[in-house]
Length: 354
Image 1 (cartoon, rainbow, N blue to C red):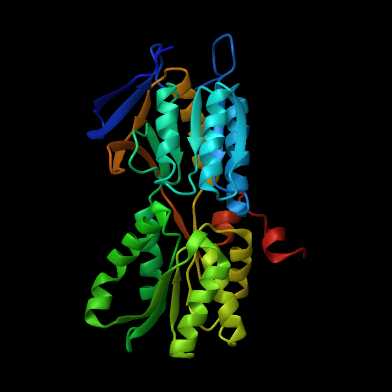
Image 2: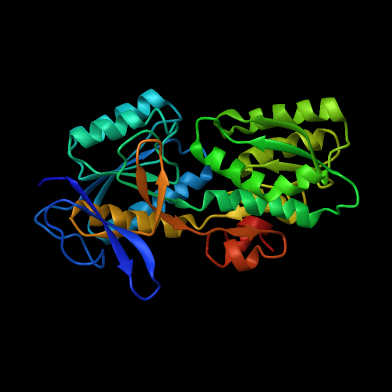
């Protein structure tokens, strides 16, 4: 089967919304994935993960594999333990095993361009999952609206704190190697731009937490506390692991629960911290919906069925067709109606057994 990409602009008549119809392969038929994969052999999908050390990625993996199996596909899952060299080797291993499509959560979006190149030479389409792969001929990107994530975090701080005096803010960004960290920062900047310019918000300390590690976030928070003492109103932490590190530093100073702390991913530890009052909010990204949709799209690309992407994102080399899902702010007040309602966490996990 030939795996050349054909992109055409489609006008969606009802909404007058322009989308890209992506067709991979020469046997394009049908309008999407609605049933089990067809053909004499099951579709083989390679899923290359950056890490499984964060609880969030295990949820993505499980939902992806479950949906792929429902569609009759087989999935090989490899985790690189945040090692770029190993992840490229994982992709090469998946190619050798003759998978039909590869889905990648890159540790370093730039380093993984090599993986996309190798897959392209083998005629295998690549989907970047939740994190963009830059400077590459990527076939498709599936993620949440990451700039909107940052906007929601920034807006929360402005809405939560009084503006009668300057809000003294510590900003903890994510990993420099993760393009999503840049997108989160862009959204935060957009939300805070006017407040910073007018003096309503004073950024007293900011830094990047390598590999999103809580230890690195704690180091940043400790540096802020050493320099500014207890005179800090809020911590704009870009995700829940960086929020965890910040909260650990605040605890040591007796400030946990007294300083607004943002987060993202609605990890169980973070949601428990929200209901206990130590973390103020998180962003719930319905990963089950994203993972299941990614499995459907992977099977569609592998079997030559069209996939509609309504957005594009420039990865430095091309405008990559992009599928975006929206996100939800989680606070103490809406835990039950968000993460519990969706089955992301149970009440027993969050609150303990009654």
